[in-house]
Image (cartoon, rainbow, N blue to C red):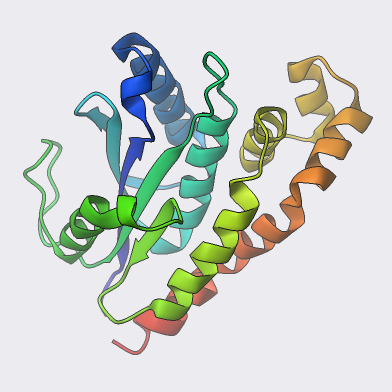
Length: 214
């Protein structure tokens, strides 16, 4: 039975607007967060490359959307000189033929799909893209709808969503951000988190619809 993994290539949007020190700090913080999240099982932990990007490999393709939304929420919670921050995430889902801990030496279907998408994701409006071995236009349409949600998250809302994606309770988020629990709940409601959460929970089923036919 074929095993489907997810290769994630991500790069900070408009990284030239920020100093190398700032982008490095953000990526290091993000990678620490992704590695620590117990819902994400990494076959190859995320690693910074090219200064403004990272790559990682998830054992289970069904976890890829959670990782992508966590990355975006974390980056969108950072504001720099009133400039909005974000990250593009190219997800390639498929088999892996060779996996090494040296950047650029791994190979396989998922790597090729992710690399191809990473080169073209700037041409699409959605900042999360998914490439599968079979045509997946309906899933691309779902990512377009998701974009209309995520692109409207404010920095304060994104801070709260980052906590939720790390399985923090409302009370813990409130304590960490030094705000009231009602303020946390208001941000959750305003962000329409329920819709993103539902998609994250059902994403493995979406992937199964495509991969079980191959």
